[in-house]
Image 1 (spheres, rainbow, N blue to C red):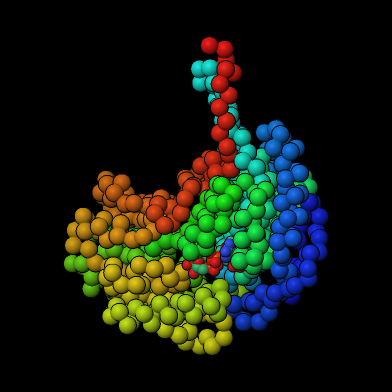
Image 2: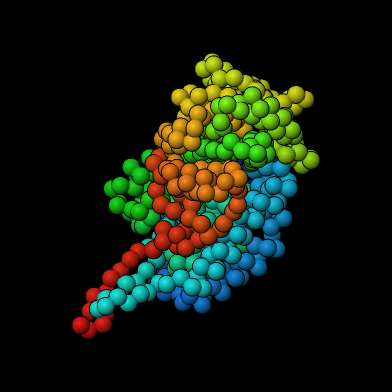
Length: 473
Ligand code: NDP
């Protein structure tokens, strides 16, 4: 049982202003696995005051000092990676190898990237009579979701630290454990008091207080589109910068060639990774209509091959994060059936033999792009396959979405893949897989505003100042 009932404010673990706790439920067992305190706006005020005070000195820290700090964090993070992984497994249900592997590696990846970017980032540039300076924006409010806890927390904290900002983190109630351990790591690494603060609690209370706060200069949010809209409204009166990384309904175009079956199998299994709870998941698989029968067979086989069970066991997929997420996904599966989509794998209810825990069957539909299941973000292991007549048609379907986060193109003809990638209206495209910590990540359309990861992630936390007359004319 984990009881994390204190907040981290001004370099110390402190009691909340008013005692109030919430249970954290393990989604694999449906049992209580711990408690957190629910903060109030008074706790946010304290954290903001500490961050404001610390900003005066931390914003003046040299690049060398900030690099040393990030390197200290690197050493502490690596000591506790296994512990972080265990916490992630418990809080959101990822299978142990995924939680202790890719999940925690994403955190260290963002840390290593921030260190490398900081070594060469140009904070000043002379242009004629003018000096252009990039300066830390100030006190930042970081609001994060539960689906990739270390990824989404670290992709904000480390660029903010690298650029000289101070911050308040509000982790998700559903997955608060790993953030608590991360706060301990930052403390043990010597992060100066007030530079990093953490308050746990409800988004509708703590998050709102942060978005509206007079003394917070920017909000970086990852989560759902409706909450992103609300945050922007709440932040409007104080003219805050708001960075939003929201949802997606990302298209994955598979070309009609000799590797099609392999690509369909990989895309289907990929959709089930992290129980489908990935904002950039390729949830619409676009395949040549002329080969639909073959696609169905391959995709059904791939989905049925995804083993589901206890995150502690030897399974590819664990439960989804919560009862409410399970119910939402079940409603979408029912909706797909109602809309007349063809179910080729999975379906409603838990997988056979699992009657406890929020487990969902890896589910594949063949449908059309106008169906609700092809338009809305389901955030579960549910793939919709859609046929295209030719590549122009594939692009038309791919871009016919209110979202524009990720996109995928798989095929043997690299030039054809490149051509399609230029035409897709999404913030990131993956051609035949691949991974790059330095590539900017963010969305077009309702998938958000701004870019995280690598040097683009630094820009989120920087103001631009022009000092004209720096060089006399
Ligand atoms: P939310 O957008 O509700 O939550 C994300 C974070 O925002 C949490 O920390 C949450 O707090 C906080 N929050 C909630 N309301 C407010 C508010 N009014 N002001 C400020 N912060 C707020 O996502 P959910 O976790 O509820 O998931 C719902 C759906 O969101 C999913 O089904 C999925 O479609 C999508 N989603 C997308 C993600 C992405 O990466 N794009 C990530 C996660 C979810 P609290 O602790 O109270 O929940």
